[in-house]
Image (cartoon, rainbow, N blue to C red; front, side, top):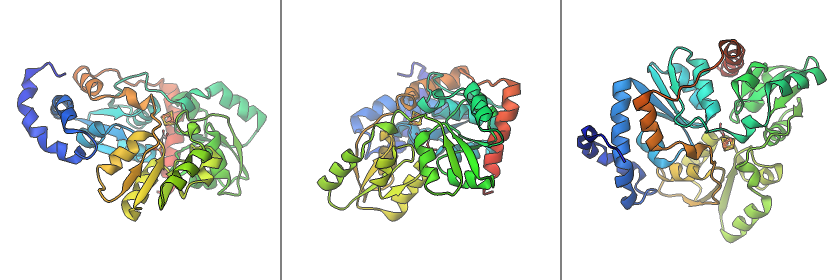
Length: 332
Ligand code: 13P
Ligand code: SF4
């Protein structure tokens, strides 16, 4: 709970924010969140800070304190535009590193440094150098879910929202595509470019099975299934639509399927459900333990202490930044 009484007067100010989340956060829980929401919104003004929140953040973060929300691509794009002095990344470590690469002179905070990613853990810079030795002259396309050191060994980055476009932008016959094996196979199905994959997986999406999806489909008439491309190929084949988290959100908000199952991290459904009342969400719940390390409490602490900061070795940063900037230039 918030200890500082100076925020007590702000509690009334944040009461209207409950309206945004009332369909996904029970009323009895709001008094737990409200003091943090009040404190964070005040601290943001004092620090000239913005909060960038990924679509997998919990609704009280996503709807009540975030200034910018979106998928990895949107967060990277919007990070470049901010004039704030401080960026708080409510997401995982690689996202905070991307924001820092694009804003080397700003303070970038990640409220819990342990917020990692199984994909980022699956590959090292030395692994990329070894791949290059094995496939001389073949460019390396790196999913943003990687460390700055791995990005620095790459030609260009991509996200799930632009992977095919990025691969085709290189104009080569082959590319090394790291580290997500399932995203690589999804991209390979949509392009003539030969994809050389790595065997990294997302620990959240690899757990879904086609059998599970088919059981949901037979139990819910008229169900639309939309999936993230980090899922195994058999799961993607069982889905009606595949896209990045932002593309999934846009699908639901524009097409308004009566009943939808989002094959991705749990909080996505909650965050969209708070915006649309005419869609029924069927929720198989797979939580990302890394995303869930970020809480209102540690966001508040980060803004108070301006720690923990993301720092990147300047030599690594030069090449990693170039790979991210090349991605941002694609489709501009
Ligand atoms: P998006 O870029 O689609 O938001 O995906 C990021 C991520 O970590 C998915 O697991
Ligand atoms: Fe990484 Fe998967 Fe979590 Fe996304 S959901 S941050 S890919 S572990």
